[in-house]
Length: 159
Image 1 (tube, rainbow, N blue to C red):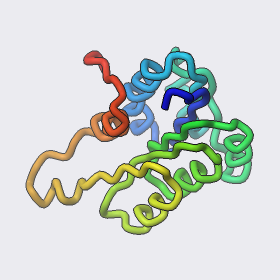
Image 2 (cartoon, rainbow, N blue to C red; image 1 turned 120 degrees about the horizontal axis):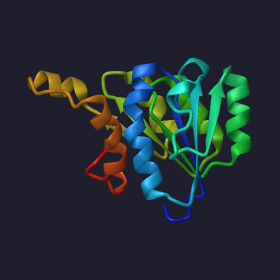
Image 3 (cartoon, rainbow, N blue to C red; image 1 turned 90 degrees about the vertical axis):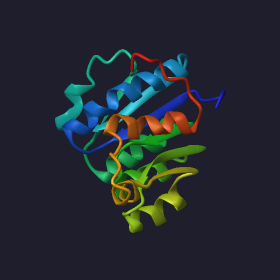
């Protein structure tokens, strides 16, 4: 992890999901202060991250083909998928990054199978099992921060 120069965060779903991702973006910056950090978002969500001091670049998901070309030419060392959807997993794989990680929900068997192929470090969340035990599901922010915990990154208490 010490030779991570370029990082891509993929969040190509809804506005609220991207808002819940902003504490994680800050954590990534705090753990990789010298790295170039990019994010791939939908055009209708980009205003959420415009001006975010933790980001160096905002890429817009316009089509799968165009976005995969942008990502591949970016030569990222680390790709982090925060959108638990197949196309985001595939974009991570096509990036060619040495380290590819993301959240996978255990009840989505199809995504779980492909995530294990597309990611070098898949992080499976067992939300359904939590519900069966009648426990509270972790908030979206906590779910995303589980990636940082998985890699033993420092998490500031103010996040």
